[in-house]
Length: 532
Image 1 (spheres, rainbow, N blue to C red):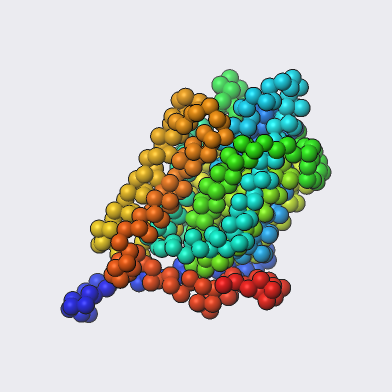
Image 2: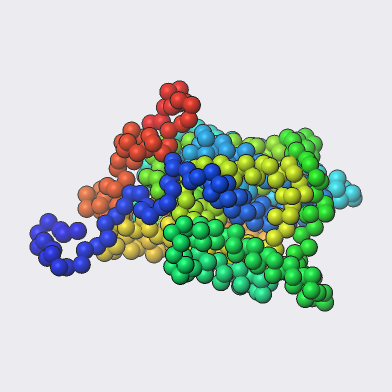
């Protein structure tokens, strides 16, 4: 933009791209559903994508707890069932964004810490040990859920988010996507002959094929995941049946074979998960505090996740009161996870946010249909287990694209900031660098030593420090938020550098008429629960 005394630009000079409140070129935005057949297929695609985390977390946790294939199948079903309920609650009463609420990796270190605590070593029967540990995680999750419910429903989080500006949103949302890099290519490389073809086919079908075959129907870019997964899954199955892995190492067999997940055989035909299915929860104050810290980290990460989803749903920026309401309902999601016993808490599924970008369909109805698929396949165990046995490298290849899209969504907020300001450069560079560097140190230290850099002997205290510093978006978001709100922000020109003036109209729910269209509650509930 021309400064006060700068000459007006000449007509033939190149003009900068104008900033956009809503992302253009989205086929179906948050309130416009696609036709039913297409919506059902797109919903099924969301279900396929969220299966990755749903299976990976129990695969990591259940064997350490003492459970076998049968317990793993039950935990996968429970996570699916709970994710379906939580996604419906979030899309109906929370932020109302098309956000899938699934199991979160953020809670895994705290759960592993509960597994390693000495108080379960006196149980010789592995199944009894599994149930005792599961009940302990349930107790910790039930207590930890109160944090997000109180911060969200009381409006305290709303007061924090009011200070968020485009410049502090960039590192937060950017690293919500890019910070998950260890789940991308390292996962593909576990079985490169399956993972790499999946990645190449996915990019080719979604990015190149639509320009080669101009059907005008958006079939390839919209259903690229189904095309790519089916092709490579059949190819992987042929390799398995043909005996390509018969003499391979056990780790290769686990990653590459299509018959190694052990879920299909162990899953019951029909089973409805129910609360307290593992028994009454047990409570331990230290573990509850550690889980609360994990819950707070998940809250910060989900704030970035919600902002990314709002961008790719072609909605306006979330008013703080709506974000706070969503966080309250996410607290309810963690409570439901604790009641049913999933072993980990819930947060916004980042891979599904990336899928919104790939398909360019940000419709709320599609994600609600996906929630229906989650509940349906969690009850019909055997059918759900077939899809859940997709080899992990195929899922990791999908992550390479989805996490990249979410990271790019974060970078897109730079359009509101002044990139020629040294203050902007410092905040951006420093927060992103520390957001990558500090968690790298903490995670590397933990991988080598088996415990985090903070190792006092008080297990729960160690977790409360190690977990937040191991999260890239948490570190980057907190550093950027602090610097942006303390570095000489009184100056009126700095307010424009931060991009704050672009978000002024979204500070309150009534500030922009579009907020009502995107975020108002159904069934005329806004009359009883008004947003401020």
